[in-house]
Length: 293
Length: 279
Image (cartoon, rainbow over all chains, first blue to last red; front, top):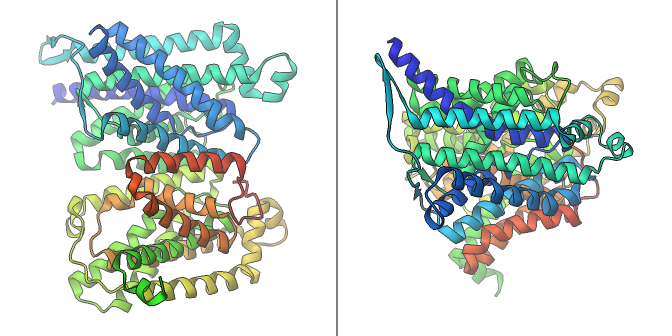
């Protein structure tokens, strides 16, 4: 019994760290321009496909694949912001939301046009190594996913807290106009935020591709929505909240599948969402987190 | 083409009927989002509640059409009110996310309910809905909405949209009116869903997913929120234009996305909207 629980916890941690990576993009964008970036899930999907291209055209090296996907998605994220969100910065929230949905539809269906709607097998970037300690076994891949996620999150933490751009991001999230008066260029900061968030989502896409060994053009919608739930769970706008929310959601989902029923996997995430919204709409870290990005 | 041959053409008749059904559903969403200012991203869930309850009554209990449709409408309305109660406290984006979550939960629950056919859905539902019935539903729906919006109740709902706190100060019972708006709006979605089930004779939980809700919201936004004419016009345009674009079906969805963005950038109030709803 204990082995099963530990195994499930590890699975949950693996999925959860991926959710956290995507949730960071949602939370940063929301923190800065108060927009639910519906295209974020699709950027994650494009990241997975860029990884696939890199692995088949360039080399089957994990680092190359990851960097290629992250850079490509960062460019796409900035482009989406420029085309679909920037012209709407002063309009109503619902207009921006609809525009974001439009961007999401365009991205996913463009990939369908290029690739076709079918699933694609993902190249193996890792040898099948499993470590066994007593009755507990961990695959190299799982450990790697968790480590890469933690590394990327630490990188983000470093950028936000120790660089000039990070300070600017925090300033803009506090008050865009005041930041502008202090000589910060908000457009630059917003572009940077989209670039960072999109590259994290792309990394998540590559990790999910290698973990589940298949990707498809429509995978962004549901996975993105769930990552969004993770962001809300942690308190949208809060970076530690997104990390925490992702892990909690991953654990809850895996435990729910193992002990309740696998067919309710998606309902668990949204059940948590409604529960959190009703009990504490600001999320777990929402009200206490002063440094919102 | 004269009217008679138009009505005899199956293809056009099907599009016309689906257009009418969409108008009914979008009228309901207009009351919730356009008039009351409560952004809902789960409207398709109420459509599915209407469709499933109505289809099940017909399939399992052999109920006549009017019983099925009335029950479907009522059931969706009651569920709308029940959802309205817990999410009263939520505003703006949080409300939108909660309705989105509710929509997904309804879909997953139906997907796992044995007597609702699980992922296979329900088929061989008796086909009762005709174009004329759908058209009558539209006319009755428009008259109802017009009278309702221009009554004291409509005024109260609009005051909530404009400024909730000010409305409360003027003695508007915010909680009661929000629940009322959700109940009536959802009932319209349920009516549309019942007609839909008895028209297509086949329903599947995945027909009522998140993208369906988005489609309905897009119809409303395109036409213009807070306007009955707009709701109807948006439903007509987005139900027929994709059919006209069918020859370019591969590019259909991409075009749809482009239209949404261009529309939001250049005419955010929609084709017929006079007001800019800020929700």
